[in-house]
Length: 528
Image: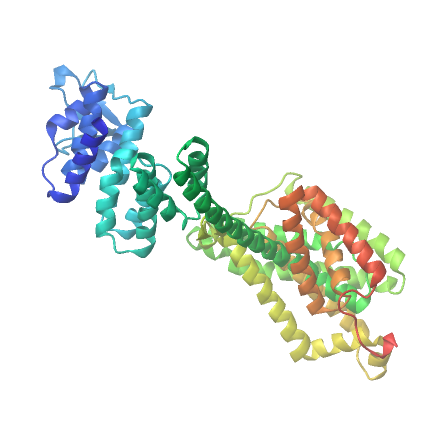
């Protein structure tokens, strides 16, 4: 009976204009017993006064105080040093002696939360109403069904209306007649909410009526199918996201390994240098340009490229140029260089990971589907990866350096015979590949901590992408990165990350034995 009284009072919020805040209701909220306080919450909602939201929120957050008999049973809202009368909204100074906290139990807390959501349903602001509906979708009281129906009749936003229909059906399922419950179950079949799945499972476990059980079974199958498709969409996005990261990490290696045949074991440390360059730029902006902090990434991108490219050119000119044609010595030398770079970074920045903060535009995400949130950081990195890929394609196909790189890749001896400075091409190609590794580090700094061992996590994956796609093949690297990213995520959902890595590695080994040239083989006279 109390529930229906509460529903009737809530409905009055839609039918009557705002009046002065009810003094008796506010006083009962602070001084009454449990039943009186429940009724007071309903009365405040029924008033429809915007100040009721302030009072109820203060009650929920522990900011509502009772001044006691000596102060005339005043009810106060205390926020820090600011004290306000909850009824008149007047400032109070000083805080009356003997003021006590107004405490609430779980039952009252639930009633307050429901009342706040109910008040938001009548808001003129679309975002407020949508947030209220999302909150009610997590669990609404049975007595709010008439209120939800009333809000449904007045709502004209399609997204909010769809959620209100599902909330109304959920409430009807709990307390309606057999016919209305079956109709509600059929309505819930259009939902893709995991809470609806649990509700339908509960109906199947506890319901004795066969007609209701049959309707619940049918709706549950449809909901589970929709949830499965949402999960597949989430896995696909995660796979593309991982593939874009692998692509960034492997693009530079595809150039250096493809053009010069250098097995660069320090490639991961070049990624690390790009990440630390981003960290340094972030700190400079925070110290000297705090107002433009959200723009630090625009500066960090070229800095990370130049820092890694400079290190790469230095290594090529001082060490690697003397080891061409000697793969074992090159591998050992670059491995030693990687250890030196790791220790150098530890000496400069310490052995602990450092935190790189996302700009504001990369925080949060978008809920593309129910229970599928796409983080902005991942979306931006996917776009960034394909922008870098487009830039590389333009450089290789539309510039003289790109022409030289393609010529040296296909036939180094013939390119040298026609005047191509192969030594200089090697230097610029190695610098370009190192710079792209730095861009990968800049991107990776936005999705995790930056530490001296960052590059070690990606060096094996980078080589797998290059070998699987085909040495020196840009298109092969793209396809290989996306395929490995998707396969990794699918296998992780079945068996865990470790087993997924093992399965992918075994697959690559068998694939390379059957097709050593990878998915895409180079064509040229040197291969004849």
